[in-house]
Image 1 (tube, rainbow, N blue to C red):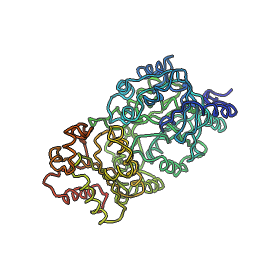
Image 2: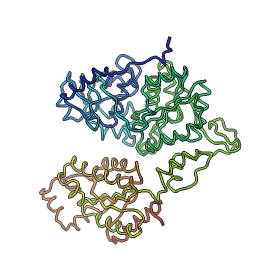
Image 3: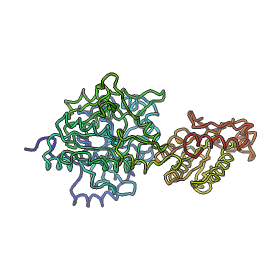
Image 4: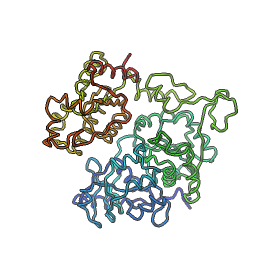
Length: 568
């Protein structure tokens, strides 16, 4: 008799022969091209990682999950997994219709029978699932500014897994992991979830967890979508592989999970527990501030440090997976070891390096002590995150037409080229309009698309160690934030608000554009008939009235020096 956590679980795939036939038939169906997040969700739906879900949630299940953390039939499930689409696509679909689900290269991964189509109240979803309708939360920002306005629900039929070309030997479906555990004779398995590199505190935490649970250890990092700004999964997996030999090979394994995290704190912890149960685990480590997204718009934490543990504990028996709870681990100098913070003797010297401090030390090329991390991990991190003075970065000017953005950007470009060391590229609004976006107009949709193109090019320049100087109007805060997230995967993003008043811009107007806009001859003109979202917290705000261009450019250079991006 196979014990329950090792028995095979249901998948949504059809047989190989049926898949070949279905693939041909699906080629005739209306298709939806999946976003990266939707591909992650579909993979875990099809391979059983999201068991008992049989597809994307219908409206009744969605409403119930949002309000009660349960499916309509009462089954515990804390996270809405929905297929969000555009209004135009939704209008072309009727309930009962089959659609093909394709990856971003057009490969058909599965089909879905649309049973439900509805427009959700996203503010309500944000409040209930994430605890606040605050766009400082990355999932709430995604919900409002990236996700489609209409949700589709219905059962999914799996044709093939998404293709992964990286770390293929480290990727396992739930049933593959269950088979491995059966082969190894592992009856008790504790899973460790992480989206960060492993340092010595994590090693101590996982050793203690496995000992406490008397279980084998599965290191199960997320390599799908994590928090914007996190270290890329390629670097993280190389870091994990570098320290695996610090663990006993007979009782430790590592597998990669292609999950799109929502950073939903307590709800996410329960969700992670259910996913790990589906992967054959009997125990799950829930640490301090599990899946927390950081600070809200007021500067406070979205969730309490142990809210996730409390919610998990409430549902532990029903979930069928035990929690191994751990407090914050700190290094005690006198004992030369890591201990839970609440067990440290009074008067002992506690050493700790926060994530922010680690990033600062990497950025400035400072020492990272051996008590904190492993030399091989630090070496991998330094390859990806060299000292700031050697990284690429993006300077992003924003302001009204005629504010002086292009003039200052040109001056800055010349100064940076004079300093040398890195290639410098100017992406001026007019230059981009001519060479990249000549077919676009000035509607909000087209303006957003133009800025996203600039952001994409800037992120590629930054990734390859160059300096991108952008000088579009970029009137919308949400689009500027999206560009920031694109760039900050690879280097620093410096937003500079050229804060010239609209009156001064009109006075300087050599092309007569403001006059035409006031006469109604130019539609959707920023500052006249279209809004401009003033940046709330730019890295630098420049006042240009009665100030020389050279002085403005020099202020930017001083800012770059203070951030360690150019040599003082």
